[in-house]
Length: 115
Image 1 (cartoon, one colour):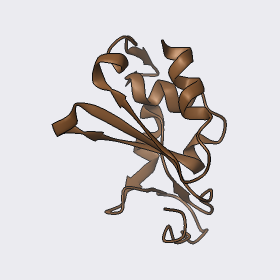
Image 2: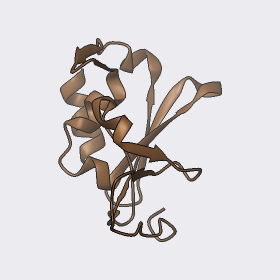
Image 3: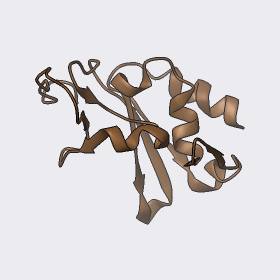
């Protein structure tokens, strides 16, 4: 199941989304690494090259699903679309849902043109 979902999400073209039912995600057991728990979503995104700059996911509670999205354009600068649980402490989650690296001299780029 995990490999199939990684392939489904990884094949998204820029601007595309896919909804995956929580019942499918629950088939992927969480694991711990470096003191952080990797649930199914970070496991999927963590297996896609460049995911932190191009892919993000969010829960749709009323439909019991998670939406995965590939941005129209990759992020640059200190912004990330997703981060792994063991690195979350290095980032601040912004109101727009993107993550900004805490220790950088590089200005954050705008996320306006990537959605």
